[in-house]
Length: 87
Image 1 (cartoon, rainbow, N blue to C red):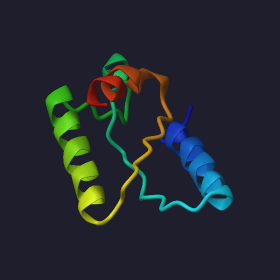
Image 2: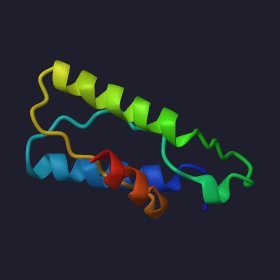
Image 3: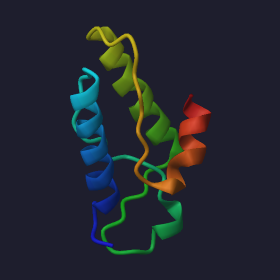
Image 4: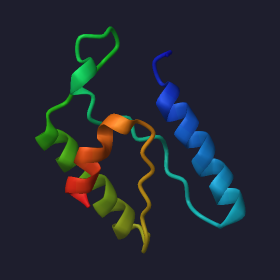
C-alpha cells in the first residue's frame, strides 16, 4: 500500500468519532513499531526506547494541557506490542 495508508484510515475514523462525541483530535502521530518492514523504501524504524520516550512525553504534554482522558488509536496491527507495554 502507499506510504501513510494506515495513518490516513485511522485519522479518518478518529475525526468521524469526534463528530459523534466531542473530542480533541491531535495531529497525526507518525512514530510506531515497524521493524518487520525496515527493509522497505520509506520506512523509518526508531528504537523501542525512543518510541516509548516520544509517546510518554507526548501524552505528558497532552495531560499538562488539560486532557483528562487520552485514547490512542492504532492504525497498524504491528504496533500492538508497544502500545500494550506502554499502557
